[in-house]
Length: 270
Length: 303
Image (tube, rainbow over all chains, first blue to last red; front, side):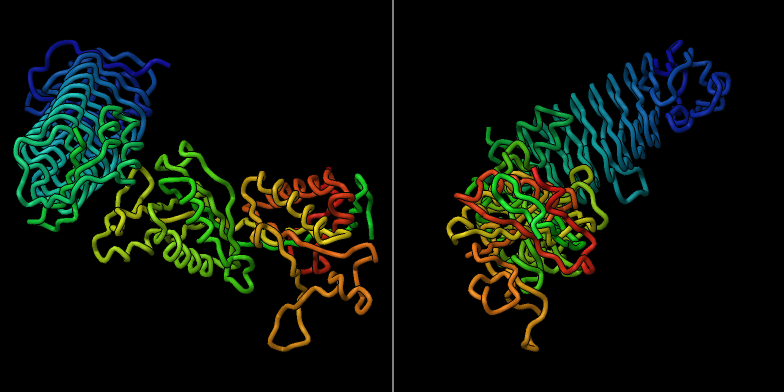
């Protein structure tokens, strides 16, 4: 069965909140009801039917043909099914999702995967700052699931990460994995300054090191870790590139010793 | 008593009586197949009978690197006990003393499902003295405990099945000790090809089968005098004049089917070997069918 398809009619004139168009919110609705869903974020009312031409299809498989940096909160709260975007998206893509698969064939704005608890988020382009991070007032970032970014990620990727895995095949900005509680953050390219800043636990893999490593990480030497083999197998489902890095001999830096110090930065042998 | 004779081997018209058990499976890996087996053999040592050892345990099979969670050579072991609490106690002490200590080892749950979960790494992690760290990958959680050769990786929990069966058995009777042992060895070798079943006694074979009770108050079990060839003329013996040696194979399985399959494989091997080089007669031990829920009739398991 073909997917339920939203095709962009024209570039939106305001930021849109697309969270109502996630799979769990559409089940049982008619095409007319879906077209009438309010998406606007200003006093000017915008309905789904104004922005998209909608083609009936499988409610568990949603396709957005065309994207926009103003498409915010896409796939928010997803629990199951698949949502695919042919283009870029705005802030908080996959926010608080707990299941299903969200695929974005383009860039994603800040706070993608924020509060994510499960499922899979794939970003084919770049991700904005604070990938998987908490919003203001929240104490915990992403707490489950798997995020893969083909391109680069902005600053503070994996901020307050608690559980789950964030895989970045390109580079990452400054403070990657800052304040991590636990979980796994893997970056194939070079990371910016001070990765793992004040992290308590968890694993950060840096394929090409960082522009500046914190002096508060202690060098534990190079090892062939059994745990890295398990990580490699797990990561391989989403990124063969990062899985290969986990299979190399790994230099282990323990830290951040300025915080709890039970985390680690792993540096694959070049 | 004899139901029939197959290839010259007499098969008793009797059955093995077996009991419900709690069981779990573990996968032990190491840098080499030798060290995986060493850890497995050490962990399953002194685990021949629940009566004296607390559990019955043994090697189920060798696993190739492609089959194990960490891609290293591995061995799957099965452990059986009469209660969940005893199984938990045995698991903790055996993995803690025998697998954690073995060079390069790691330990994983060997069952994908089960009625309950037992603590595995969750109990042993405290050896790390605060330096232990957990890694959750998908639905599986692993503990990494720093040790002197690196890290001991151990899955947090292991599933336990309540559908396991312990006490399937064959009594192998021959004209000489050598022939009887040859038949028992052939049976054990065939049984090792059956998945989810172990033979917990030394090399899979027990020479001191027991009966319930004793003339001594302190002993709950004593020698099975009816099957002792040196007492043939002194007791109500189950042995004819042609029998000079009896060996027993006890089988524990994760399922009743596994026990039956192992007994079937063992019987086939004994019959195939024939009476000239192997056993003259095969029987099985039971308690009249009143104690154990599982009955395995030999005539139904014949090839």
